[in-house]
Length: 359
Ligand code: UD1
Image 1 (cartoon, rainbow, N blue to C red):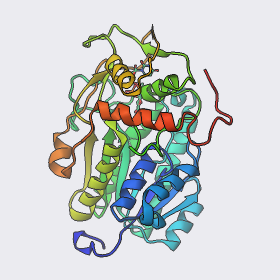
Image 2 (image 1 turned 120 degrees about the vertical axis):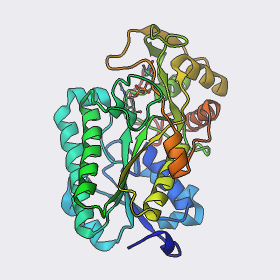
Image 3 (image 1 turned 180 degrees about the horizontal axis):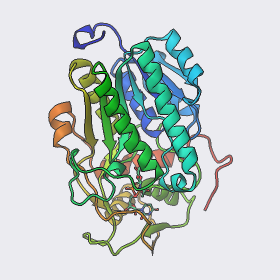
Image 4 (image 1 turned 90 degrees about the horizontal axis):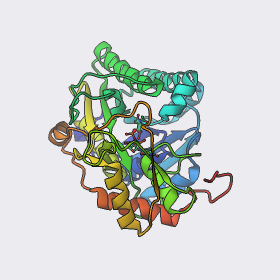
């Protein structure tokens, strides 16, 4: 079994959903940290081009990346990959993640997110690969009663997407209770934004973006007319919602720190960490920072609150700092600089303007 003393041998990590936004940035950091990486992705909301760019950015380490287009709901396909490669650990990003869509299509969310996660855990268990980093979300805090959110806050799911995250956390906990050989880290992301500073990889959502910064970026490049600000009557500094935005490269580095912890601490159990900056920024502050970074004006229209939104959410970061030795390095200026750099270089995302909707 691998542990901290085996570091002379290169470790191999399976990354599910590795072609996606957070996945692709994490794969790059893994390659740069000398890991071998196997990505599986069904490309339902991502493109292989992202991985080609990751391999280029990684230089000679790019040869340590391989990719299989499979769907985790296909257990046989996953088993076949585990037959040919021995994995030291898995980072599980793959899943559907749009809140609104999850309300409209709950069966699709429950089927995809549960079947894929259960298949993965079963195959890992059968093959004796029992180290997992799981992509969770601050959504499991529901409407938090106070801020900052500490990891021991009561948990609550407000929609099917949130329920799949919360339930997967509980499944991981049960797995470790049943078999203490499992080492699991659950990472609760706050609001990932920005892009790799090269501007080569970034977020490229299908259709109308649900999240703030992808929408702002599409206004900046002329793909959308104006940003709808969802409410300016919240009890915050300027009335707009406050969130903990975190640079995706910081987030990716948080996964490397978590992996190292899994390899080095045999009694980690099933541990949970927030990945955020600990700082809250309002919608208007974020837009102003983006305007400054891009030199573009973002026209705004204040509309009604979005159902399910809360006024203010940000992370307590002490636990990750103390136990993972990880802390976010970038502030909102750098986030907006890198968001704009990606947008400016790739106004229509990875694959040009073909089949993309507008306005
Ligand atoms: C959302 C999800 C959350 C998920 C996270 C993933 C909801 C209710 N929550 O979080 O479950 O884990 O994305 O990144 O969808 N805003 C606007 N106009 C827009 C878009 C957003 O004013 O067009 C505001 C929102 O009201 C909020 C802030 O911007 O105050 C951030 O919104 P968003 O990027 O969607 O993230 P969350 O709602 O925090």
